Amino acid sequence: MADLSSEPKTLRDAFAATLDWWREAGVEEFVEDAPGGWLRSANTDVPGGDAVAQSAATPPVEATPEPVRRGALSRFLEAEGDGQHPGDPAQWPTDLDKFVRWWMESDAVDAPGAYPRIAPRGPAEARAILILPQPQEQDGDALLGGPAGTLADSMLRAFGFAAEEIRYASVLPRHTLRPDWDAVAAAGYGRLLLHHIALARPERIVACGERVWSLLAHGAAQEPQALTTITTDSARIPVFAIPDMQALLRNPASRAQTWNRWLDWNDSPR
Image (cartoon, rainbow, N blue to C red):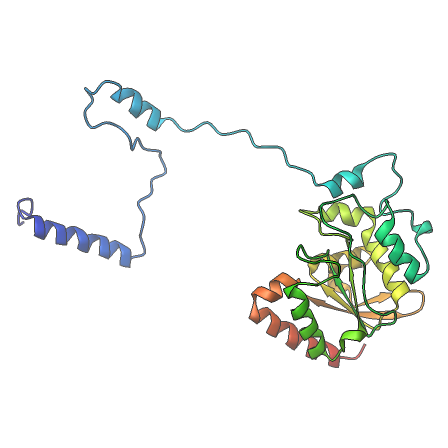
């Protein structure tokens, strides 16, 4: 075997070729299960060398995990002595205009927050109601006031709805950081959403995101996979599900898939 130790260039080429071979095989990192003392001194006579080696070989102490922070909405829903949240269903307004005022003003609806409450908008008896989980962070004084609103308007126009024929609503009245959706469902916000739908009497429901779909099913006591219509005192309203607006903004393929699903759904008998 040739002695390559005295031929730096040849040794360097051989070493590079070896790395290339492993890289072609899909191996790009050297990993061992056991921790190693990477900082161990080559000279064991160096003062403190053993201490450095021992420190490097000692596994780090695991930090105590921080307690999970509960948001203001979760604390609000769990508070005792403040009555029911989001209010007593027997006291919910039965007039749509009064419901919107109650939605904006009642202390029973949600906890105070850094973001403002935003009212539903659009006509009663709309051709469709688009329901969001909550207002967008960048919304001002109207639902879907940012880039997501431009996309929603274009999508609904492609579906065949004029802007004045759409009602916009949300499950929560204000943008909320990290809402506990299980607690939201258990508190009755799905039932409150159904109450709003019954007052608004839309022809169709467009449920934006899995959270809305699940809350509609929970409020209507249906399995999510079996949810096709919502039954109110006056009508059976078909439901069409779309991804949440942020997913639609990010993913053109998701928009195309939603369009194709809409064509199939809109043509199917109900």
